[in-house]
Length: 181
Image 1: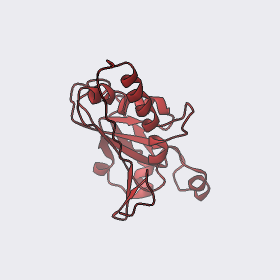
Image 2 (image 1 turned 90 degrees about the vertical axis):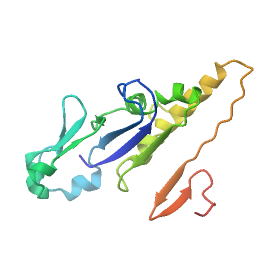
Image 3 (image 1 turned 90 degrees about the horizontal axis):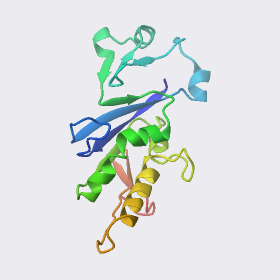
Image 4 (image 1 turned 60 degrees about the vertical axis):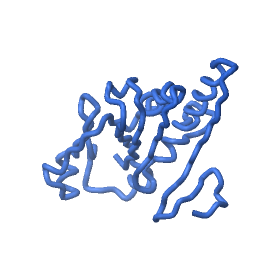
């Protein structure tokens, strides 16, 4: 599989993430893109496998040999791992959906997408807005404003959002791109 984006969710939600609350770390793996397939490698099968309980990944024996990875360094554990064919809705269900009730209880919640360039962070977070392939952020916004609509009319809400990119130690405000660091 081509790459991953790791999402760190801060929430006290018990939905989908068990009874842990706090910080959860999930990993999403995308399929190889056209350039990666064209470039090829000595690996003819999958690069990794996801455990039956979806909490761990393991590089396949073939991938370990090709990438010169020792057996002990081939296993990784997460709170949840998404396979390559995971839908945007499924990612949202496991990462963002449980945060909405927590926001209405007054908790601050954060989702952090982390990974190498080209691994699918923007796709997971934004997707194609206005379609079934919309990402976590549009789905969160929908849920927040639906919650506001369904709340007592005497309650006043203030919604604040930050959307930033940190690249080469430079912070870019993605809502106000003209702002400089």
